[in-house]
Length: 419
Image 1 (tube, one colour):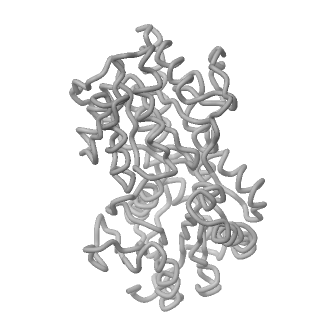
Image 2 (cartoon, one colour):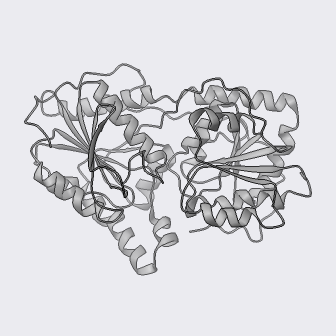
Image 3 (cartoon, helix red, strand yellow):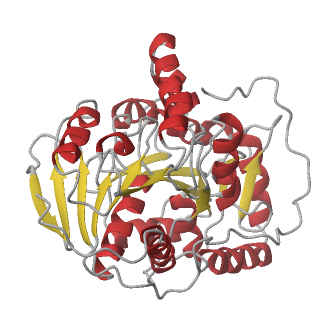
């Protein structure tokens, strides 16, 4: 549900001291990992990265898949299918199987897995609010790891009727809690793990394997309009609340008449956002950049003073780390996931209870006027981003899988071709 900013008080606090605790890769920090040669893995995910509204969860699942292939595993990635996409293809060594739309995928993928229930050694069941119920359909000797980025209960109420939302919450909570109680669960942040335990009363053991981040390559600084320029990077979907970022061009016009907002991404909200960008109070100062190549995206990020996200539902905040890798701090709400990826007062600022997004962005921009503060925070951002690589993430997941399979004595031999 959308957080209320009514009756909020202006920001008037000093920055918190640096946090000394950092997320630990509980399955191992080493880039090296055991071999998974001959292991057959099915990874079940709602979307895949090539789809139009794919986000950080899809990138995480794909990077894990690539890493497992590199360790010798044979990975089948089962997901939904968008119009025009082939039903199957091989990409980066991963066998892609696409089936069903955003709803039918939850029926067709379990049926696909049921028909191949004895052909996989391990299933990674990614739960995007609704699980694929892998423990119900696979053979008893097939191990299942549940992957949950964050709790979705509030998203159900934000997007569906109360009746449908209650059903979704019942599936995500009591039903999934029972079915996956013996399956090791992976999540991406301490606060997501806490929400699983506290809000879903999760019974299974939980491991934290944070996101990685692409290596930030040097780019030519783009001449990004705005003095200052702020950027939003991510999917253009309702729960990201991008309209609040766009509104900053009007909300802060009195303090920062030269402020411009740059929106990088694509999604179903692009139409409404384009209409909002044409309204008189922000016209000419909001730039919808659309989907950009990696180099162009980094050029825009590098030219911005501040990255801003207004999302209330995140397991981590991959775009926060992407911006940090380029020395750009972030303002975000103090919600699960984002409170882990943003180190308040060190690599950015968190919007706490009683504060508005505009108030905290105003404070951040004022502090960043000082070149020394910009240099200090930029260096802290880059150092923080270096903590997270896809190599570490993949090695952690590989070690976890090896541990799961070793429960039965040894990494199993190959068993028949999975189709």
